Image 1 (tube, one colour):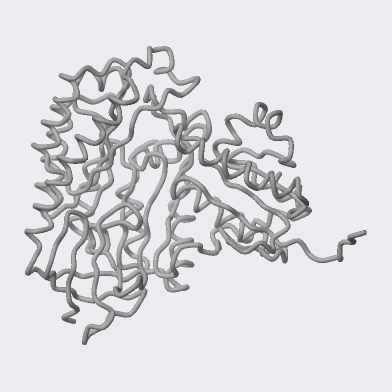
Image 2 (tube, rainbow, N blue to C red):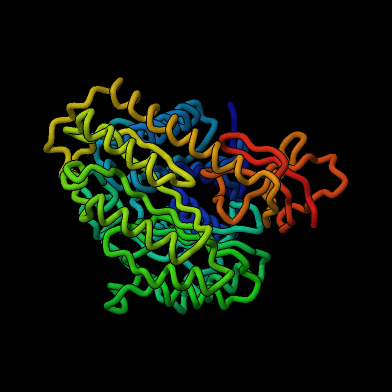
Length: 438
């Protein structure tokens, strides 16, 4: 008969989904280690006896990945290879009752704001003194800084408010303290994230205070790059552009999901903006911030999207020549306003439109990259991969954007986690190759 030896639980936290989930997992790991747990993150080792899956429930593909991951660990629990299995995050928040019936091997399901309850289930205390002291799962030189939780927008296709609740800003002073703590530990780059950055401050200060926050963070010693993700275009606070132009610490980079260009589709999406207003915003941004890198995402296959409306989107992308662009295919999400509309664009048409749009962007990206050959850029190096050191310019965010590759056997080699000046010698559609010149 097999007997178990008494030992302290070892926890493996598995993170799925977006960067906001990464921050949530980092805070959870910090709390667990503060309670003397041994904790690993996304570990392939099989020595953890407690698994916590931080799920994503944004679209069908993400939900499928989350469910498959939970099922994988449920099989390990049934075979006795792990003792406890917990789920948290967006999918757990949204579907916990149904999933609890379908996957009984999960010991408990927790929502997006229920970390204290999850800790209590593990006989751990929520330690308020650890707030802002999170451990990082990213490389030591960059970190995500979540400035707000939830969203008050009314986009008809989006289920995030169902999973994350309404918008709640974090105070400027609290965010500055966290940035200072991160800088003392060697973080050089902060990536500001929220469900929607530009709404920041309306709940706390009764006005949009993202520009104020940016100036405060730019004053933090040791932080050299501040990068903005997930900005909503409607009622955009243009003082953000002034802050970018005035402060070298604020990257000339903006991630602003636009979703579409057809006024009819934008209206059905409840995006509160027209194509003409979007064009004016992009023009203003480029005038106020010369050299701005503009990243966006588009959503194809929304209910009722005609071929003509899709072609209008294609023409818009050709005209705007975005530096970075990603494409999602519409996912019909329960309890959203768009769920009442017929999901009438066939799956193969959605896929075809996504491919066609990315082909347009691929050509634009290649032309923009070719224009950089011969120029020199400040590059932050993240990792070594095979024969290359891999880094990013001011115009590139980790995981989603272009990379700069320098041969590892070059005469001048960069240091990981540090900046170097790189002269670009070659370009492909989505990568640059170069040599260190200083």
